[in-house]
Length: 401
Image 1 (cartoon, rainbow, N blue to C red):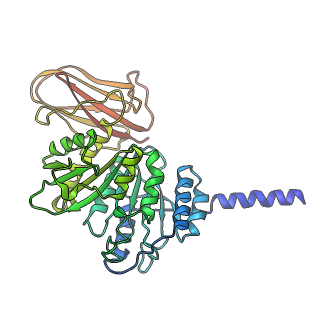
Image 2: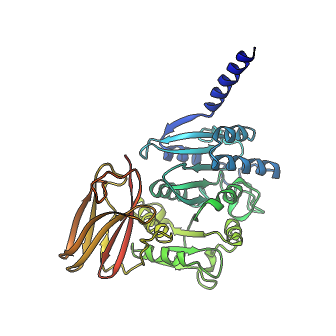
Image 3: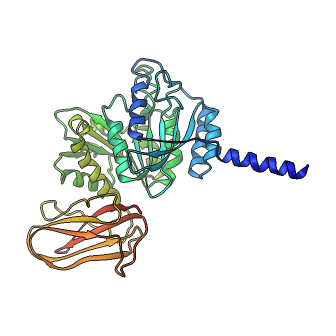
């Protein structure tokens, strides 16, 4: 009898371990479909969660962060949500855990409108990309999702309705301006595990720059100026809210920003003009600026200062991600001593690519994923650093074996 009971328990545990569902597909298509079926303005399709429901959603988030995916799925199911292990066929079969309403991508499938949340379990930077107004701020969801995929950051959280789904007063569906929603709940739970939170917004105003950055206070953090410089170097005009300038988009009433500042966490609020959001070419420039900024703000030993963009150039490697070889393009305005080296995420040098005087012009170098001893290095994020005339530039690349 005991043996039979033991066998039953083993079988039950095995079946339970496989209970939560694995799916595959282009994550961009999934989110696009969810956007299509979100509750629209004045639809009154947003269900305001109770405090008990928010507490349970917080427990779901904690379970995901702890790798207890089956438990997270079981808890989510009590709220009408599900957790899926998702392989993104549109992005190198990258793996995410997707917390969503199970039929949110289908007609009449949105029952609550609490949002969609992506968690990347591996090979990622601890950054949050947030999209609080995916319907109201045109294409911000696509910009945010593209940044999430390209930068390989860990978290993507997106609201589940139009910000005015339940009307404009007191606009309970506007998740960036109140706390009674799952968007804010998840922001609170994942922020302690994140280096930065970036919230993506859209605006249209002729008397403002192309991009407005803020942290919601009159004292912008240094990283905002780093990001501003990176964006300017890519051909855009940028304003940073300082308590005086660009006050209309200073994000002073943003709930996530207020909470993050009170806790000492990094929060960035980015407003973009529509011509950026509707063009893949334009918003990809913003994403590469974010890539450099998120790296330069870390404590990696090879951290470099921002230098004028008209001096010399270190282009994004191609292909990226890569296996087994990638090409790095460098432009030098004149002849000079040049060093190009590759570092791992701990700041340890992996490979010296070149260390000598080079002529002016474009220079192409290849890296075959080996260290200075000729041994293959493992999959992961690497940084390539160009030093020229006492200046440095840094880019990030991904090796996938």
